[in-house]
Image (cartoon, rainbow, N blue to C red; front, top):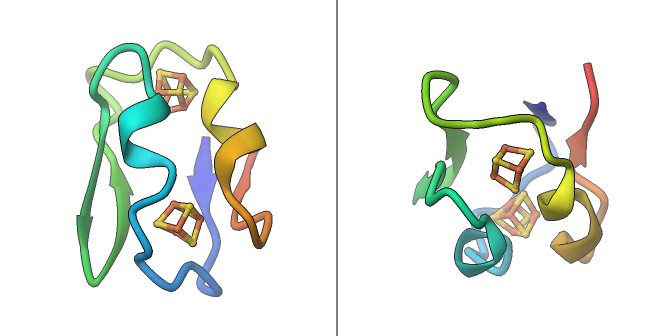
Length: 53
Ligand code: SF4
Ligand code: SF4
């Protein structure tokens, strides 16, 4: 998964990751060692800033 530059760090996606892989420090960050590419988070970003890569 990839976070695009347009992420505003709202944190909306964070609680929806079943594996706790997303955190926000100004912008969202996905821990690649924890992420399992389930794609759930894509649906919960209101500005479509999370994409498959
Ligand atoms: S793809 Fe799945 S595991 Fe990876 S950050 Fe998104 S919700 Fe979490
Ligand atoms: S929901 Fe979208 S804009 Fe908000 S922190 Fe997550 S990726 Fe960034």
